[in-house]
Image (tube, rainbow, N blue to C red):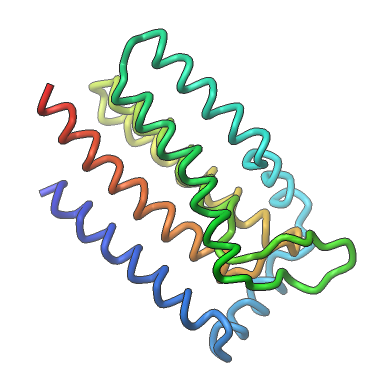
Length: 198
């Protein structure tokens, strides 16, 4: 049952990303982007969370996970972490270069491209990866639930921080979440298949 739910949610997330990829410049999404910008722009509390998904932080967390699992000699988790965090980061950079969507037009804006949001995409990958490994280590359903609620809220705030700081359009962020989630679920399938073969 859970496997089927994950497969369906992965397909929906990827389909949403594809839709956004081909329609982000449509009138409907432009209105959505403006509405979300009006709602979150200038919110200093939310904007603060952008610091938790900078390239430096992501690379540091990825390195810590790889080193930790290397010490534990858990090679599947090493690969999972590396694919999710390092692979996710460079995949995101390639997509930005291919799509070449300009960022919101504000003073002092970054010169890099906008779609999909790296904070949203790689943020969900590294936060969900950590949540998955921690929750898998406990038998308590209550603890698992709390871990995932924290992960979802944290991921949401990291993504919204890019709208609050006007570094991304809301459609960039939603696309990042969607593709990041699809990649995460794919890695979970791969990891479970690898564990069952051990």
